Figure 1 (cartoon, each protein chain N blue to C red):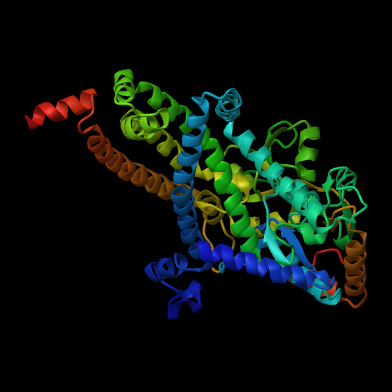
Figure 2 (figure 1 turned 180 degrees about the vertical axis):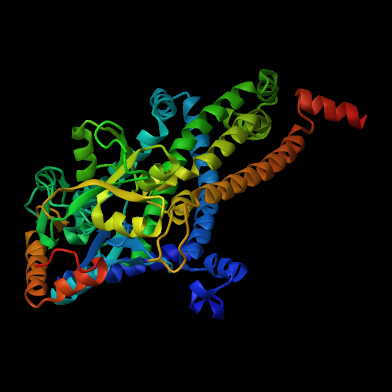
Amino acid sequence: MKKLALTTALVVATAGTAFADGHDRVIRMGTEGAYPPYNFINDDGDVDGFERVLGDELCARAELTCEWVTNEWDSIIPNLTSGNYDTIIAGMSITDEREEVIDFTQDYYPPTASVYVAMEEGADLMGGVVAAQTNTIQSGYVAESGAILLEYATPDETVAAVRNGEADAVFADYDFLADIVAEDDDLMIVGDPVPLGGGIGMGLRETDTELRDAFDAAITSMKEDGTLNALLVEWFGEEIGQY
Amino acid sequence: MFEYCSDPSSLETTRWFACYLTNGVHMRFYSSFLTVLSLLAITAPVALAFGFLGAMASRSHLLPLRALGKLYTSMVRGVPDIAFFLFFVIALDQALEWVNHQIQCPDWDEPIRQGANFVVCQAAKIPLSSAPQWMHEVYNYFIAVFTFSIVFGAFAANVLFGAMQSVPHAQIETAEAYGMTRRQSFWRILVPQMWIYALPGLSNLWMILIKATPLLFLLGVEDIVYWARELGGSRTSQFAYPHGDWRLWYFLGLLVFYLCFTKVSEVVLGRITRRLSHGQATMGGEAQRKAAA
């Protein structure tokens, strides 16, 4: 341990001098790692998914050195504002409430509908028990819909709640649920899709305007040359909205 | 891990599990057991030291020191662990960065608190944002160890304080009659004898400490409970090893792990009790003396 502490001190010291000339900032990309296909931890233990590929490309275009870190969804905004990482790239929809606390880049994923998934066609979506992940636009919507909201910390648990019979339905982004429904014969999409949110963007601290502009420019360039569209189709299929 | 793992979808059950249980995420799961064990190995002695200092302070003749000891034990013991963990870790982290900021960037003119944001200059970040991820993890880990030690130190302080009061007063009086100073009688008479009185309380604390390790997750350390939940969740075919909801099995595994661990602890603590009872004026010590006679 002593040796470790010593090397740590040494690395801190050298990193400190390297930083002094101002070019060496590493951008820490915060994500949840539990929301396939947007972001997830793959079988090797690395962050993977649409946002991983996108984020790496954005960093390359903005000529930034980036590092990926995962954080619980529940505390993902507080940990951004307190400086544990520099961006949130975690399938976070752009909403007015969040805009009050953090800044967003332009959207890199177009506004799409959220859907209900249940075990049976006739599930009571407006008066029954509906599961949603805490602090999402979906949980806010369910709370106001008249249904009884059952909140979970991770997306996977919301689906498990339907399978266990604890909830009548789960309400989440279409692209998250679509893959699960496709592989589970017991689950089906019920009711009408609900358009929610203003698309997904990267979240940044309000003070980090330079960084936001850099990522904004990178997203614009990806929209212009069609690479973003290609990436969206690759991860979400042909039906996805494009730019 | 094994050569045949390159295409998991074609494997028969045994080999599939052999590959599944040795893939990258599982390796991180297994190493998180070491994280938990090392946390216990470091926290227990440090908390005991905090407890000892707290107990000594609580029975000091100097009023400020005594007040400090009492304040420490009653304050930390009176706050729920989770609330303390959530508050203290953020406060400590920000305090360290604030101090570092004052040293590193004296010319900084922007306010540090901007609404919800806590902004210090880049050079004052601990660890630096350019530092590799493992350093952030090590930092979080030691913050966690420190927080656990403070919390459990407060409980240990109370236990040790009680144990020090339990040593028969005649022992101290005899020491004084032999001309020992206060300090001498404390170290030579009181401390060696108090452990047997402290042990039941300390062993309780140890058990609670073992069971409290899942709180690590709150502190941003990826512990065994985090990985069990993560790995047990159902996986679509987007993953190389798709499976249903296996959380039940993963948590069952944790249950067995914790039960085995506490069982081993009980056996070891039982041995220590027997050892410490030897020659003591307690019922246990008396029974040992009679059995030998």
